[in-house]
Length: 81
Image (cartoon, rainbow, N blue to C red; front, side, top):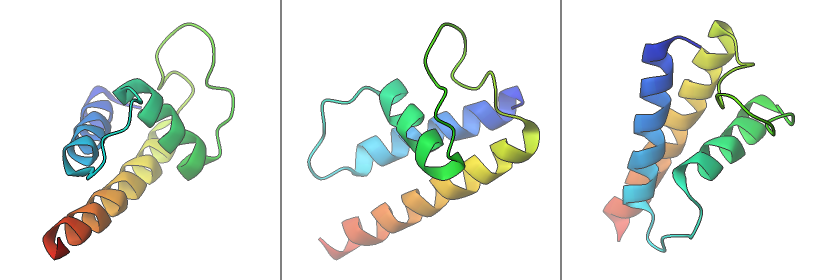
């Protein structure tokens, strides 16, 4: 993933944290790993290095689009409250 893709992915994660009605104890990094596992099906996220180390440009696009969809749904739910 490019640096700008990584930046956008983190912005989405932090926006999801803001919108969470019941904040969990999960740290942003743990949330990102969970999103990567769910959206990309990537299960080899343990070890040292960047979370995004094994994610290519095209997969980054897919991850960002999935995160944007999560944000839109969270914003819609927040507006109903």
